[in-house]
Amino acid sequence: METFGDQVLAFYRGLKITEKLPKGIEVMNPYQDRIAFEICKAFYGKYYHDNLRRFLILGINPGRYGAGITGVPFTDPIKLESVIGIKNPLPKKPELSADFIHSTIAEFGGYEEFFSRFFINSVSPLGFVRGGKNLNYYDDARLQNAAGPFIRRSIESLLRLNIDRNVVFCLGEGQNARYLRTINDQYHFFDRVIALAHPRFIMQYKRKQLAQYRREYVEKLRSVL
Image (cartoon, rainbow, N blue to C red; front, side, top):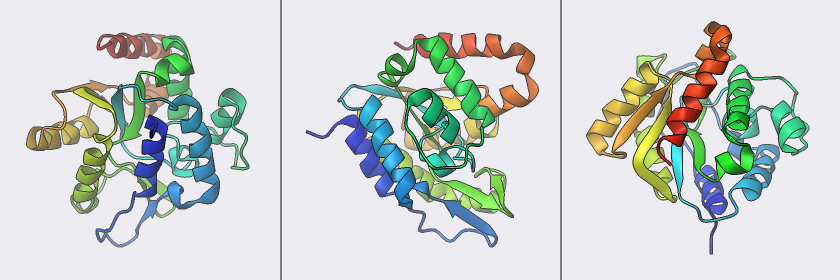
């Protein structure tokens, strides 16, 4: 019988954007990279080797220093090796969002507790770059329109996992939440969308309130259990 982790890996193997994107925008697909996929097999084999039902948490899209190279959302090569114990040859550069997410997971109760209840992914599970810099799917209206069918297909595929559809958590209270709520109103993926401040926003602009934001995350996440 396939585990939750097996199904996640199958989802990753099938990720592909077939739509034509605006000129100058490139797709990051770490799941076509042997090293990244081996990392994913180790990670999801460790924490998702079961058939438990989980709540979905959706970020924006992978970045160059996190899931864009590791394949594991909000997890940079440093966290993989020093905290999770998955050795890797990737450049050891930190990602701000990963710092916040992993400290929040620790406050929630640790990796086993957290990952047994939640699955993190993104509205667009593949990332974008333009001119060597990260690009959010909503930063360019042409990209958002072009990626729309891929985003819809990806969410529909995620819902074939053992996902609780009563609520989805959205990382980002602005454009990401607005977009997710708009397509959710149209396609009825989830009963509710609960938005949380995005980790990068917190780390860049609200560092003095880190403890407060971590508590808010933990309280909202635990409210659905």
